[in-house]
Image 1 (cartoon, helix red, strand yellow):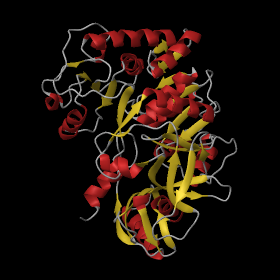
Image 2 (cartoon, helix red, strand yellow):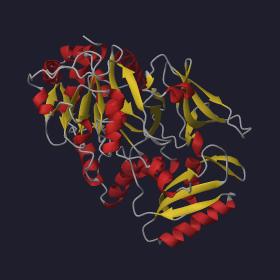
Image 3 (cartoon, one colour):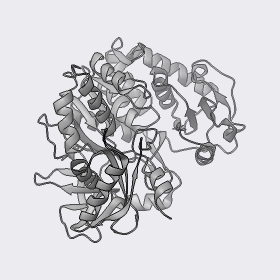
Image 4 (cartoon, helix red, strand yellow):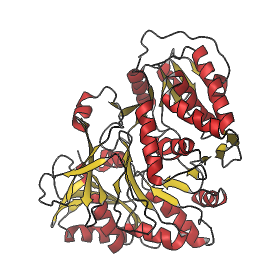
Length: 487
C-alpha cells in the first residue's frame, strides 16, 4: 500500500465505525465505508487504464465523501490528480492538459473540447469497472509516489503546478497535526473546495490522519448559514480567510447568540488576520483566531496555538521547520526580511518551470517570496509578498500594513493595496477599496488619497461594491494588477 492510503487505512483499522466525513447536507460516512469506497474507485481507475505514475484530471466534483474517496483511490493506485479549477477558461484547461498529459478526465465536461480524444467519466461511474481505454501515446509518467499537482494562487503571474509525493506529504501532515494538537475527538469544518490545498491540507487530511471528523460545507453558502453550521456541527477546528471571518462577524452583530465555544482552533491561513479582525472575532464571536502560514509548495510552516488572544500576529515555526530572514534590497532594518524556510518535507517543486524552481528551491532552502517581521518576542509576522513592498516616507512598507493603517484611519470596510511596480521599490500604489456602509465611494477615496499623501505615496484609489476574488476566496490581486495597473 502507498504511504497516504496506508496511513488512512491504519486509522480506519483502529476505528472503522467512527465518522470520517459528514456533509452539512446530512451525509455521514464512516472510516470503513470511506476506505471501501476508495478501494472500489481504485479498481475502477485501474480498469480504465490508470496505472502508477499516470495522471487523472478532475473538474466539477462536489465537496463530499466521494471526492475524498477518489483521492484515496488514486493514492492506492499510485496515480496523481490535477484539478481544473472552476474559473479556468478553455485556454487554462488546454495548458493543464498539455503540461500533464493525463490518461483520464473525471467529472463534468466543462471546456471538454480542450481535451478532445481524452476519455471522460463521471465520478459515480469510476466506482464500477469500466472498459479499458488504453494508454495515450503522449501520456506522461511521473515519479513513483507522485499523488497530486495543485495550482498556486497565481498572485505574481500565471498559476504554477506544484507536485507532491505521498511520503513527504504524510510526514508533513503529521508534523502539523502535532503542532495544532488534533486528536480523534476533534471535528474539522471545511468551507473550501477540495480542489485546493487549503481544503485538503488544513482540513481533509489533517482530520483523516488524526482520526477526527471532517465536516464538508458548501463553499457557495451564505455567511449566516455557514456560521450556523459551524456552531451546530460541533466543529473544533477550521481555517478561513480574513474576509470569511469578517462576514461572520457582520452576521453575528445583527443576530447575536451563536455559540462557538467548542471551536477551540479557529485558524486564519492564506492571508493575514489583522489585529483589528482578531479583536473583533474575540469580542463578537467569542473565538480566538490563530494566524498560520504555509504554501502549496512547502506545506505548513508557522503558527501560534497559544490560548491567550494575541493581536500582534506573531507565529513560530512548526517543529522540524527552520526559518530565517534575508535582508531586503533598499532596507537597513534587521527585523524585516525575505522569509526563507528549510524542511525535510518538501514538494517536488513546480512542473516544467526551471526558472521558478531555481529561484524558489535553493538547495535545502525554500525562498517563500514573502516579507516577514521578527517581533520583540522572536516570533514572526507575515507582511505580504516581496513584490508588494512600497517605498513610504519612513522606508519600505508592506501593503498589508498599509491596509491596516487604512482600516484604522479611513471609512473603509475593506482594502487591497498593490505596489504598482513589482521589480523595484517605488512610492506608487494601487488601492482597491469597499467603503463602509453609509459612506460614499467619493468620501472613502478622498480619505485614502489623503492618507497616501501623508505617507509619501501616490497612485490610484478605486472603489468597488465587491472586490474581485479568486475561487479560494482571496482578493484577486492578479486580476486587479492586470486590469487596473498601467502597463
